[in-house]
Image 1 (cartoon, rainbow, N blue to C red):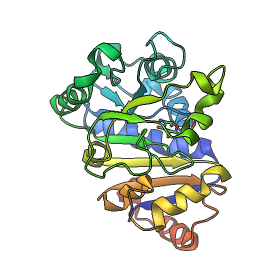
Image 2: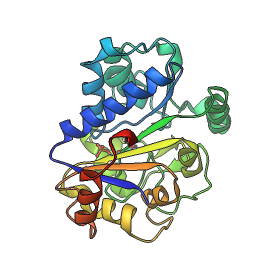
Image 3: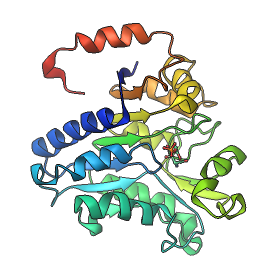
Length: 259
Ligand code: GLP
């Protein structure tokens, strides 16, 4: 199962993940990071930006999880724009080493395969940051997504379009389709770090960590990964049946283990 760490605040989670990423880059200067969008990973990016001088990012590359289909990359809410604004610029990553799935309609038929090939060419993802949707989706793998899926086009659920409407002028403006790394792609990353904050995520977190492994709750794919870390605040941990055990295990964690 995943290691579950319950922290007092999102900032604390950000600091923990930043420690892990800084250690990864020190050990492997050409590390490949998997980036997530949404509000959840922002404390990680903020913590990393404040410690820029502790890392040499010149050989680091990164792959985002997903992108909207048909939204111009110049749109402020395209995930390319979000990743540039929230990660590439504050951290000073080399833009040419940061990849986002290509949601352009003209090339969409082979965009998934192209993205998979680029990840493979980079040597695979070392550490994948993940958020989780209220319906349990990771990346944009909506309920029902195959555990074997690779990067491809998906149709967003009405719930996800409602959830993401806050970034657009209206719900109608949220694209209908997305291109996302598949659950199989995500499973191929060497370390998964899923973050969730707030009571709105409590049910999805409990389902992902303790519920049955089912395509109906894509986050439950983490239970099949050999190195998955789930970091949540108290609100997002509220429905975990084994919270006391997770606290006990973390309090007694050998110091050499890292995340
Ligand atoms: C979007 C993204 C997901 C993200 C989810 C949750 O659907 N595609 O990668 O995990 O939103 O977003 P937030 O972190 O803002 O709650």
